[in-house]
Image 1 (tube, rainbow, N blue to C red):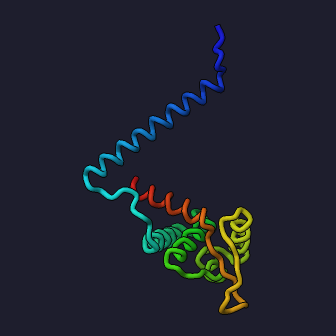
Image 2: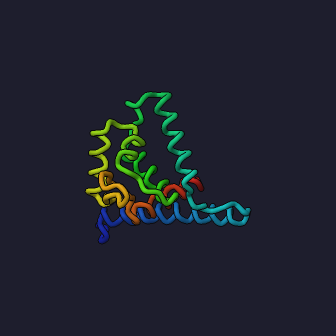
Image 3: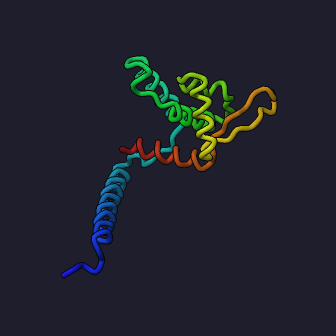
Length: 152
């Protein structure tokens, strides 16, 4: 006798069941933490992000730049910290902070701009400079991701 739902429907139902179970477990854990007075998803601060960047730089110094390089991640973290500090980020500073060659850093900035994660604008105080800012949506996603990571 054949199953009217089909194999892909059954697979999807199993996936949804697993996701619901996972969410249930996470919610139970958060409720328990709340009862114990532990902070839940504390907002990430610029200091938290700067600490992450320092640990990443330390890892690079220890193991070399070829193994664990990820300029885009370093850039978005740096931009989020600057945003939380209410500071502008010139392209040149972002390139230096990425720990990548300038041409590589510029390619990553272009990629981030192409997908809408960052915007460029002229510096109103120095028209020779260009400022990079994290999009609102990207900043919100990063903050949620980093706050969630603090709970784990």
